[in-house]
Length: 80
Ligand code: SF4
Image 1 (cartoon, rainbow, N blue to C red):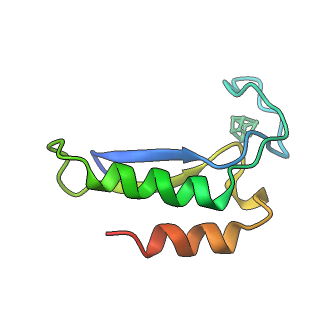
Image 2 (cartoon, rainbow, N blue to C red):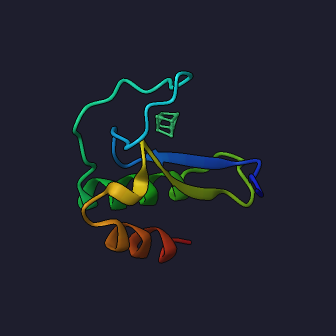
């Protein structure tokens, strides 16, 4: 799997269907609202920090369990 050197890891949910022993996550039932996701992405990409080729990553928990995952993907893919 390709991992960019500069990225923002967006934990859009804090829950997951698995129960890995090594899991670091403090699980709950929180879902990142789409407006918050959009604002965070825009703020991150508009900074003047020297972060060439920055990428946005949807993470969690299991990001596919976000109830509006497709919309979240659309927001991230329209950035830059
Ligand atoms: S969040 Fe990752 S490490 Fe934790 S249970 Fe889910 S898959 Fe496993």
